[in-house]
Amino acid sequence: MRFNKLLGSLAVVGLALGTASSPPALAKGRPKPAPPAAGETVRIELPPGDDVLPDRRNAEAVDRNCLSCHSTETILNQPALSREVWKAEIDKMRAVFGAQIDPDADDAILAYLTTINGVRRDRWR
Image 1 (cartoon, rainbow, N blue to C red):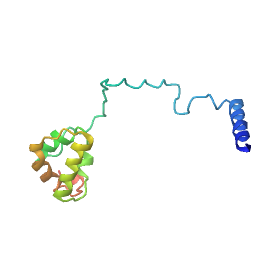
Image 2: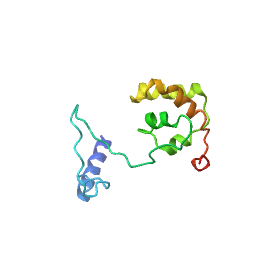
Image 3: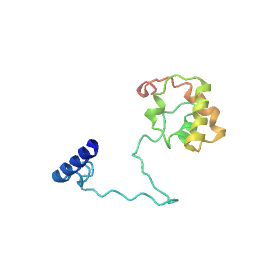
């Protein structure tokens, strides 16, 4: 019973201070966009990035299959992982995230990813 009285008191204080009905601080006067209707296509524009990876064997397969979701910086700064680990990552991207990775490109992508070894981009050129 005491807890209910305390909650009631806090609600009254909030109303008196105007906090109960004021918009969130992050709104900053911008209207919140309406959520998309079920089945509606939503267009998402990503910021521009580098167009392609540095010229290296198998780079084109990675350009075509990976750059739609990953930046060149993300791709070039990966740690040294085994072919098996990278294969599992590609399979996960297809199964979990619906990535449209061409199965015929797997060998080229794996060859590329297993030679990156976290080398910074400026050392590639």
